[in-house]
Image 1 (cartoon, helix red, strand yellow):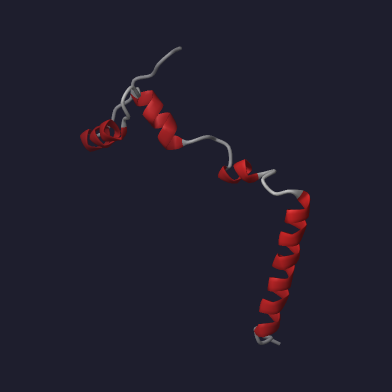
Image 2 (cartoon, helix red, strand yellow):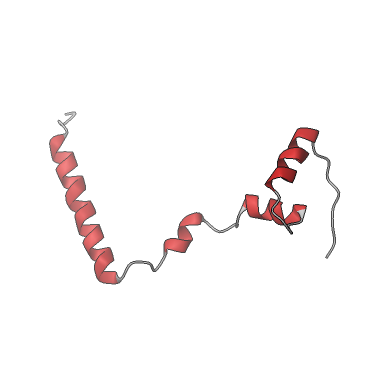
Length: 75
């Protein structure tokens, strides 16, 4: 694997060093801190069964209708 040399401010280096876990390289800690390129909500896909998702959609729709009804019209 190839590598690159970068320059850091001393304070940034110290923060990075403190964030390092035992056995972690600086590359490991940077990767951990930056996270995945994947959107964080992708991990939620498929957590609800379809019937649960339908109930959630219905409750959300009912809530929006109730909230809209309680707000005076701007017309």
